[in-house]
Amino acid sequence: MKELVKVIATSLVDHPEEVVVTEKETDKSIIVELKVAPEDMGKVIGKQGRIAKSIRTVVKAAATKDDKKVVVEILQ
Image (cartoon, rainbow, N blue to C red):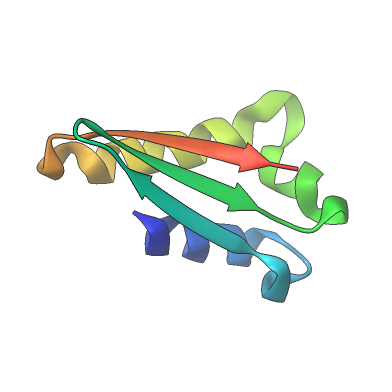
């Protein structure tokens, strides 16, 4: 999941070298944290959060084979 989020985020932003993705795993869920440059925050979130919602949907679809809940958090 970490690599998937990183590929999507780096293709969206102007400063791909500042994209940092971390992954924390618990028994039932995986938390993926995405951190980008402050000026790229709007590009990752999108108007009314549409791009962020789309990223979460793609990751959730990819995670169905692992039977784990995946949470994507976008950090400032």
